[in-house]
Image 1 (tube, rainbow, N blue to C red):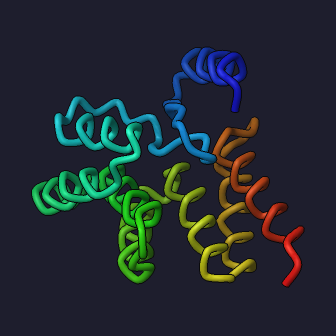
Image 2 (image 1 turned 135 degrees about the vertical axis):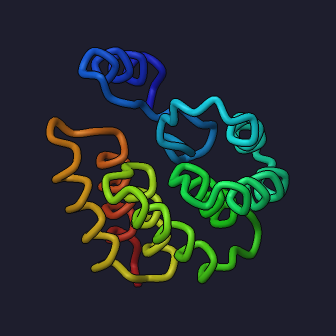
Length: 160
């Protein structure tokens, strides 16, 4: 997502009173779901993720999840950091995305990222279920829906 589109989307989202996803340096449009939290662990993990330090983010987030297990943003980021790191433990990834969605079923970041995780393990129907969930959550559309839709299209375009 280019910076201008992100700024326009951010302004619109803030005008509507919603949270907005922060841009990241990877192929994903966001590594978190616009948490309004001032949690120092969350900020530290976000900085580590922005720098591509997935192991550092995992260490911080593992402790943060243990201390605050009811925080969907922490579960989402922890799963994201595992998924993006080398040799991801997909069972752990799904466990934490599922927990984020149990806590907050409308968590757009977790909906997008669990869809991408399902593509990583070759489960296109489950990825499409989460795309449909985002379609319902994002009444006027959102970056998470667009990113998962692009990821599904890219997956479908690859020869099997």
